[in-house]
Image 1: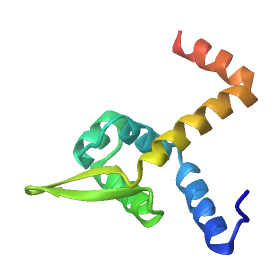
Image 2: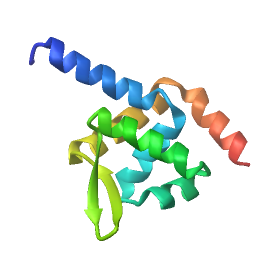
Image 3: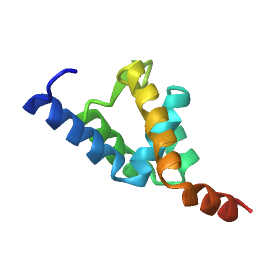
Length: 110
């Protein structure tokens, strides 16, 4: 097993900070599916474009997403494919460690 270093623990804390906000977590889950433009993300998540810009800046600062120029627009995607796997694993872990969460989600969706 690799020993945790101060730098790796700082990176882990940044990942936690990014996930501490539900909108940022939703952005990451959206980008897990496919790259997207900020306006499309804002519309999909029901937030203002300014709010989305702030969340994307935070996610860039945490090193989780990258901005890719595409003509006059900028597309966002996960910085590394392993982030998608980590998000899937974390999501599965949350569901496994809190079985009531599944029941609450089912009730809220109905």
